[in-house]
Amino acid sequence: MTDSYIVGTFDITELVFLAFVLFFIALVFYLRREDRREGYPLEDEATGRVESLGGPLSRASPKIFHLPHGRGVASPESVARERLDVPGKRAFGSNGAPYVPTGDPLIDGIGPASWANRKPLPDLTHDGRPRIVPLSLDAHIAIASQDPNPIGMTVLGADGGIAGKVTEVWIDRAEHVIRYLSVLTETGKTVLAPMAMAVVKGKHGKIIIDALNAAHFAGAPVPAAPDEITFYEEERIVAYFGGGYLYANPRRQEPVL
Image 1: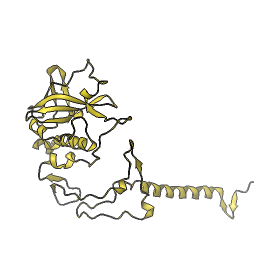
Image 2: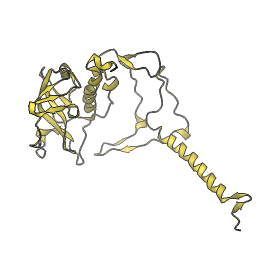
Image 3: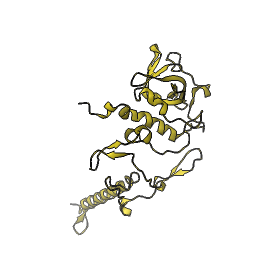
């Protein structure tokens, strides 16, 4: 019989078992270090007290992202903590209680209308051109003849009112899809509405965007430049329209049953 002991009564089976235990412990520490890169330190909802990040065993080294097109580097850990005064009050005094808006939630950015302070830079294609631009600026992309052309159609809001007319579409050069509809509102202001929230009724020449009532369209944020849109501006526009699914009408904030 072959002797499997290594030292004394310590055999290969025990060695493999201990190696597995040590590996598993190291794996747990590694995963805990990695999952604390973003979203930490935690903050108490009631008091606002910021908790400690913990020691070196629970905190990984900063992760650095090298941005394309010469935009430098980014590290989530290097972003300063923001002081935020929520434009709302808690529905009741408990952790996890929802906020009730005290102003205009679509503008204040509360709940589903909230946004992230992304970089004021446009998204770029692989060759460095602005990715999302008006259709009229790119001669290589056109709306298929088999599809209804949104330009010239009337836009209706959730209340059935006329929000305006589509004067232009903004396309994604990388994916060849429509991202935004340029809507000339009844007040004379031109805004961008997310195409993903639009239902095109081509036979009737209408587009329904039920995220907002017709009167809300004129208050939507707009890009500063007429031929490009930044990450931050996209955040603001989508947040404004997305928040309408809860805040556009009072009945949307009440339970269904």
